[in-house]
Image (cartoon, rainbow, N blue to C red; front, side, top):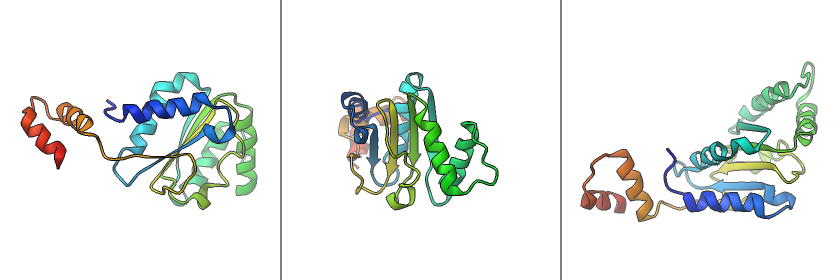
Length: 174
């Protein structure tokens, strides 16, 4: 039930497909909380899951990312017993490099310094990263704005059935 943001979703799709440089394979979606960053990433993943060999959601808040990477390492068949974090991250990066097409979504990655070691050092075409963040200082950053009036009306109409058009327009303005 993804509503609105079709233009932004199309732009994200185009950025991944129209360029082959490593940085274009990493896209950042930024906005304040509650603006739909994660929902946009989910919509992209749902629409394109069949194009990837692997799709993985990584919660990137605080210390969650190290746990997520440990789980990912196990899923990738890496023996993590006795492995330190740096070696674990390198092992995951090596394993990811062998996967032709993947999508990793780093959700709520507000501190670039905390997650940069987790980001694969190079992405080939088809190895895509989506990073959602409140931080707008990332490169390749798409900043979400509030819904347009048309998107608001579509959203309201979907959530509140049989809504009076005048009432919906008043809600959209507020």
